Image 1 (cartoon, rainbow, N blue to C red):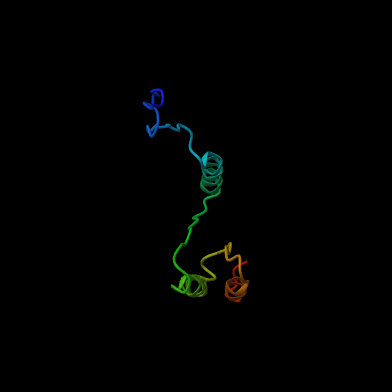
Image 2 (cartoon, rainbow, N blue to C red):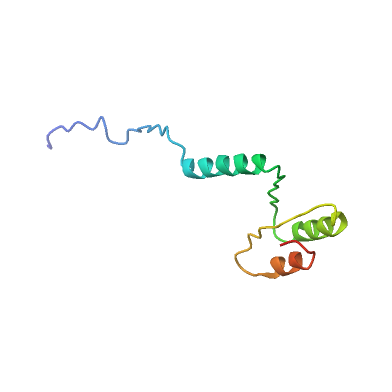
Length: 94
């Protein structure tokens, strides 16, 4: 017969509490950006949606309809192509 073994910790669950935001650096940069935009009187929008939902068309038409009353710039986040950037550039937005 095998000697008795203590298995009280075998299969036991442990909870590890993390008290630091994983994206803390991003949060600091975002707060810095918000301060910059506010100090310069800029309205900044982040447009997110699924591919093909019409984000680029919405921006393109909005820029075309509101210019020259509205001065707009666009930062394009498409990593695969420059199609959106070219379409938006044609609207007059840098």
